[in-house]
Length: 362
Picture 1 (cartoon, rainbow, N blue to C red):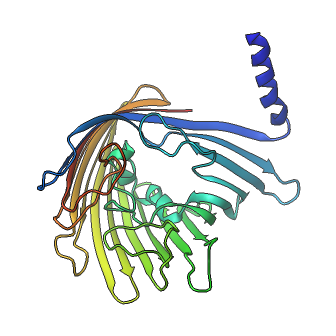
Picture 2: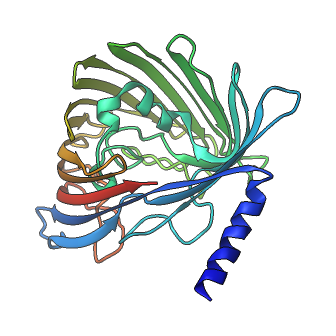
Picture 3: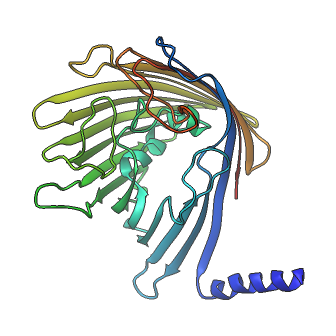
């Protein structure tokens, strides 16, 4: 009976494969976290240990080459898979899911749900900072110190250029399906990078209109439309490659405009990565200055980790992160939680995190 079932399942996959090229890939990423949050009021949760998912995913993708046009239609359905606490599992297509057109000399257009250019740019120009090993110890995101305008958008038209002598461009626009005569929560981003044998350099810009303004953090979710507001983000950074070392630096400015007052916040970071045989070491130090007009609203974060490759596909890693908020700031890593559910930290909360993780790609 098992052989009959296996043959039936194989036939179900093999028959369509004769008509279209379909690939299945993904990544299982999970970790044991120890999270300790401290606050002078002593209202912080006690240190907790949990098994936490680190953005596990499964991906189905395909390509259909055009007969006469010289390009291909491409598609992808990517879904989150929970291996522990957190993650985005439960609904098919929760992650980058799109249909698009790919032309070798002109680039790729994608339509659907996809990471915007502001988010993808970090892998093009600041490799040592982009290479942290666990999501929970990271410093990228709307409520974190860097890359606060980077997000996955669900109404996106995205363009990615081919490599032109080491230079590439990304650009996109995300539409507001709930646009009214008063508000339009559209956003757009553009980014470019140049990569040489010895260095990389690039910049990225993003703007989102009619969002709720909360100086010190960014949310691109289209939940509450507010007429006349805007959020702008700008990043510039680069890397130097010296033998097995990669050194990266990043500057970012976020501007919040509520229609009456402008608020700005600058942040800076340095990252270092070193590869030796099967070991990779990565460390980063990030600083956020005060929001303009708001004293003691900055933060500092230090992260260090090591990864050991068990094979070409599987690795284990150990990471330590320390985040210190000023008394009027509440930055957080992805691991912050209280009473078992994600929540905003108290102003001035500090966080320490130790993570032992495993990752296997397929």
